[in-house]
Image (cartoon, rainbow, N blue to C red; front, side, top):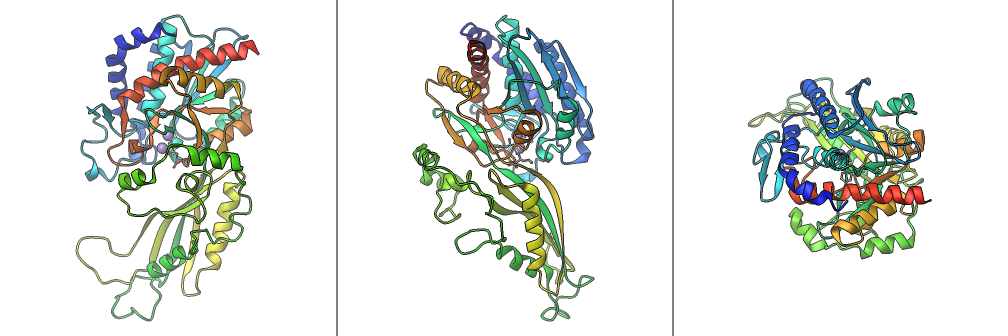
Length: 458
Ligand code: BES
Ligand code: MN
Ligand code: MN
């Protein structure tokens, strides 16, 4: 694999320009206005996989956006790596907070700025280029499959059916995913757990029409005021969630794992300074790192109702709305949590309002093994290129596919992320470091080498 380094040096500019081309496609899966662009991104990925040297690549239709599937087969005796990534991105708004337009990538101060630069186009494309390097230099050691989807940011709702319909096609020894972050560029880490998600929307209705807030205010319940009361009652003074049964299935985390988390390099002062906050806030008796990884949460993601236009309008609105997400931990089931939420929210609704609860998407939490051959290969690969053993650490984001694939296909994952938490994914001015992009391309072939050696040797 050492022979690949000069090859990478020679191709750096080309590899960067190709990624920039992909980043120019506004493949926002949540907004149907961009449907043609999402499909165009799928085609781009397919073409680039063909250029990189796969035997075949195809656009697989689903009930939503297509999955790009590709493979290169060497020998049935060799292991097979299934690479997963996504070509869809989050909406870019609020647009006025971007320093440069989200779909006109800019390379500045060692970073690529664009929506999707890190999540996940940049990280997914590292795999295409690492594969290309191995093929062009005749050092690809095992079979490879790619499954690149276009609906990750909207909950991967059609992927379970895709997995069930394509069991043979997707057979693999491990799923390799770069869609998470590391602690720092000089502190490599491997993600060993993700949280699940239950996402829903609520509507609170008061009077059957908007009212003059002077004529009626004081005598008729204002649904925005009531919604705020209801939402604030969902946490107690210890910042624990008050929904009955919410914590029933939460797995305890071993003292060893908690001790290891406590020893991970983390500065609360830097954390607060980076975010511009004076104090952190979270569940009593847990550290910041624990609160964002091994503990479940409830957050309002959006809230609206009444008058939000220019100037002032005196109105007592008929309706109030909120989008609410709960991050879940292993053993909590998103469907059960949605039901618990719905029952509780309806129960706490006072008689002067009506409440509707509408589920959006969900996904289960994941824990990935640290004792597997694949984890050891990933760890050795990072050690090789970073000069340090990566730290195993759970994180707070969600990738619903990880547990779904383990349940449906029996394939376990390695979360081989090269981004940073400071890359502002889902936020304005998302970025991905050039260091991270090239380091990923450099490290991935070592994973293939060690994974194949260790698997065949077994
Ligand atoms: N790549 C992220 C998940 C992630 C980010 C995991 C950082 C760990 C560290 C993924 O694209 C994502 O944003 N997932 C969504 C869930 C999905 C169901 C919409 C999320 O976590 O909000
Ligand atoms: Mn992602
Ligand atoms: Mn994302």
